[in-house]
Length: 138
Image (cartoon, rainbow, N blue to C red; front, side, top):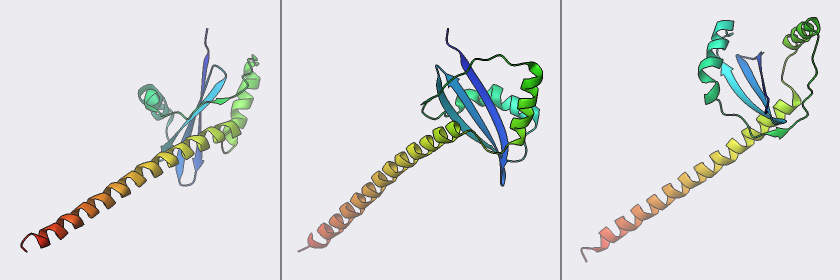
């Protein structure tokens, strides 16, 4: 049976609050980033997860090691407190976000190049049409 593990980390990255969704599925990590405006309340985060989780665009997957160790509840609570005090996100998550960012950058460049070429072709056609219009009367 496949096991999916999800984690949400919310932190302040000046000037906005940012949420990082980490999803580990079949020992592969994928990450999505969501920017909040003001500091989100607990009920707002819960509502966001319930309504918009499936709309998030997760990054391509990265191989990761999954440890399945049961923790003492008090130890888990201490670790959770330590994680909330830390700033930033894990290095694997950063790598996944960077990979997604670079893919979006490449797609954006391709799209913009096509638009520029189409505009250049349109202007060329317009210029040729004007040139033909000038010579029609002679």
